[in-house]
Amino acid sequence: MKKLKIIISGGGTGGHIFPALSIAGELTRRNPDCEILFVGATGRMEMEKVPAAGFNIVGLPIIGMPRKPGLQSLKFLIHLFQSMLKARKLVREFKPDLAIGVGGYASGPLLRAAIASGIPALIQEQNSYAGVTNKLLARKANRICVAYEGMERFFPSEKIILTGNPVRQTLLDMNVIPSDARLAFGIPVNAKVVLITGGSLGARSINNAILNNIENIRKSEAYFIWQTGSFYYKEMTEKVGATLPQNLQIHQFLNKMEVAYAASDVVISRAGAGTISELCLAGKPTILVPSPNVAEDHQTKNAQALVEKNAAILVRDHEINEKLFSETEILLKNNSLRNSMSENIRALARPFATKTIVDEAMKIIRK
Image (cartoon, rainbow, N blue to C red):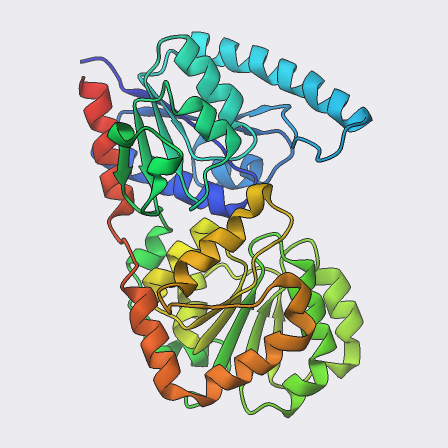
C-alpha cells in the first residue's frame, strides 16, 4: 500500500501552529506510517515549534503584505514570487496526497501551488471573518472546515463543514483540580485568580495596561498570573522592577496552559480564534481585548460572536487603560455573572474539532 503523504501549511502565531500540530498528531495516530511535511514562513515561530514537536518543516521567504504602498510593497511582491516558485518545487518533489492550509503567510502560496498541480486541498478557516487568501482559494478547495456559523457569506456552502478549531491535546485531556493548579503557582487555594495573556508573542496594549494598573493590582485581593509573551518579557520585568506586587506573577510563556486555565477565575486575553477555542473548552469567564492590528479586524468579529451569546466581555483596545481593571473587578465580585458566562462559553466548545477535520481529510484522500 502506498505511503500517505500530506503537506500542512501555515503558521506565524501559536493560534495557527497549535491547530496544525493537533491535526498532524491525529493524522499520525491514525496512520503511523504517513509522511507529513510542514511548510511555514522563514523566521517565524513555526520554524522552531514544529521541529520541537517532531515534524519536518520547510520555510518559504514569504512576508506580510504591507498596509501602505511603498518600498515594502515591492519587497512583498519579490518575496511572494520567490515563495510561489519554491512552493511549486516542494509540491512537485514531495507529491502529497493532500494539502491542508491552516492560515498564516505560507498557507496561500503552498495551497495555490498544490491546487494548480491537481492536489486536493482542505482549508481550515479559524476566524469568524474569512481572510482574502482563503476566500480566493475556496473556489478550488475540496473542503473548508470552519469554526463559526454563518460562513456561507464567504465560501461555497456545499464545501463548508462546521468543525470548530483544533486545540492542544493537553487541553482536551484537562483534568487539573483548581486547588492543585493554584498550589502549582504558589497561590492560596481559596484565592481569586486572574490570568492575563496576550498570546505566545504578547500584546503591548494589554501589557501596558497592567503596568498602568500596578497600584490597583497591589490593592486587589485577587492574585494575577501575567504572561507577557516573548517579545515583551524583558521590557516588562525591567519596568516593574522592585515595585512588583506580591500578588502579581510575571511569566514570559506558560508551557502548561491547562494548569493556568484551571487556576484562574477570570481570563484577560486577545481574541485570536485558537485562543477563543481554548477558552471555550476551559469554560472560563473572559474579558476579550481584540487586537486592532490584524487583517479585516477579525479579532473584534471573533469577540463579538461570543459577546452576542453573553459568553464574554469586550473591551476595545483604545479603552483598555480606563476599563480593563474595573471590568475585571466587577467580574471577580459577581459570582452569578461568572457562573453564567462560564456556562455560556462552555456551550460553544467543540472538543472533537481535530477528529472531525481529520475525518474530512481522510474522505478527500479516499476519493
